[in-house]
Image 1 (cartoon, rainbow, N blue to C red):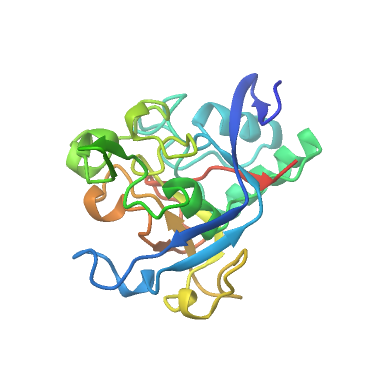
Image 2 (image 1 turned 90 degrees about the vertical axis):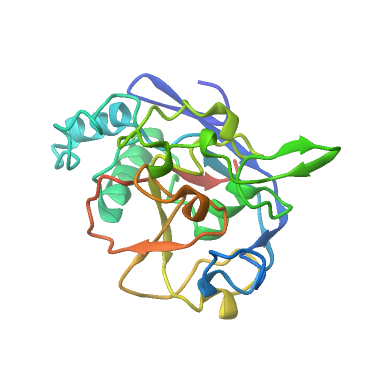
Amino acid sequence: MKEGSIVIDQIDYPLVTVADGGFLMGTISGTHSSKSEEEEPQREITLPTYLMGQYPITNIQYNQFVDATNCQAPAYIDDSRFNQPHFPVTGVSWFEAEKFLSWLNQLTKRNYRLPTEAEWEKAARGSVGQQYPWSELIDSKMTSEWDPSKGNFANTKLKRLTSVNRYSSGISPYGCFDMAGNCYEWCWDWFHPQTYKYSPSHAPRGARDGSRKVIRGGSWNSNGEFSGRCANRAAQRPHARLNYIGFRIASDSV
């Protein structure tokens, strides 16, 4: 097992290092026709160094937890569109993701957790506030434009999940896969539409309470041009077990 990775069910699960410093979080008013006011105002956020899962947790990894604890299997476990070993696990609630992390921490003697919304966005877009996780050099300039070939969305018309390492051309500046598409991902934070107006600029952790948890990244059944944007915010009830929501893990720097 190399530094910056863990082994789950004899499978190496890599984590990437996201260096400390600032990044642009949110959207500038008037810069994108399909953005929402919940993404405003755009501002610089600073975070300490942390580790972020390179992929979402997969079915084969989550099933090790189910077998070890006799916890409820994911919803849709019998549906071939969602249950393949290297697909991201979906059909698990925010609370079940937390139980998985408690089990993993007992197993590894570490302190893995769900990423905060700010950590998730920085890992997706890098420090310069690009629109989508990917970027390309065009006419000597770096640009980040909508490209349906770089992620699994409704636009792709597969109507199912895909393996977590399929879209290598869509990786983020820090090397994370599936930050746009395949499945939404649970974050730690409670969702509030006014969060960006009142939360601190250093290591924000969202609202104090609420009825829905933040989800990020878009999914196989969402409009990628909108939901695949790094700044896009969405939310769902924490007990929801849906076939388009999974999770990845994070931890403080070691």
